[in-house]
Image 1 (cartoon, rainbow, N blue to C red):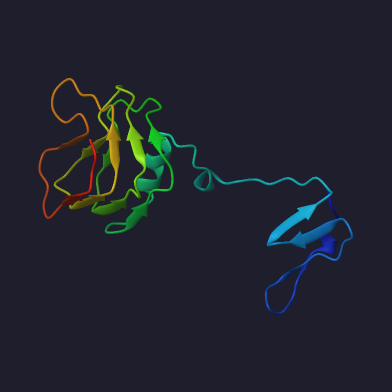
Image 2 (image 1 turned 120 degrees about the horizontal axis):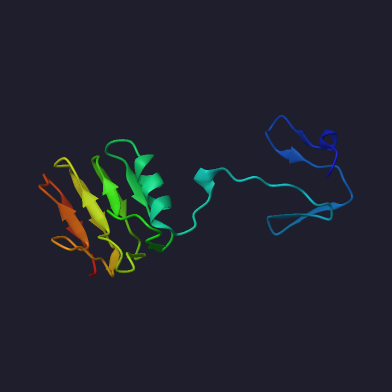
Amino acid sequence: MADDSIYEIDSQGDLNIPSSDVSVSDSFLTSSEPSDVELGDSEIDDGKFSTLQDKIDGLGDGETLHLSNDYSNDGLTEGIIISKNIRIEGNGYKLDALNKSRIFTITDSKTVALNNIVFMNGFSGDNGGAIYFDSLSNSNFTNLTF
């Protein structure tokens, strides 16, 4: 691993790496030395329903989530629970329940906006294979594909 003392931040906040084994070209940083990179859980998007559930749980009331990945069910038996007022911009990505559960369960009469999402293979033994809700207020579902 490289000596941390060779890295410095200048007064403009730029990273300076005065080392012959490092080069920068076309906005990519490369190094001939191995390095350890640790990603926090919030930085990993593996395309699983449980990851999407974590993203939704991390939103504040009234915030918007922009999908940047397709997602599939990884064992959530009730699908993805939405229990706050949020907006999800799907950007055309797919949510595939793999015939294991419904996709969304919306609770507590929340205001939810869903836009440009493809719903696939949702399943429920009763109602709401793709989206289940008891009641909604001021919700908006646009450009959804089932």
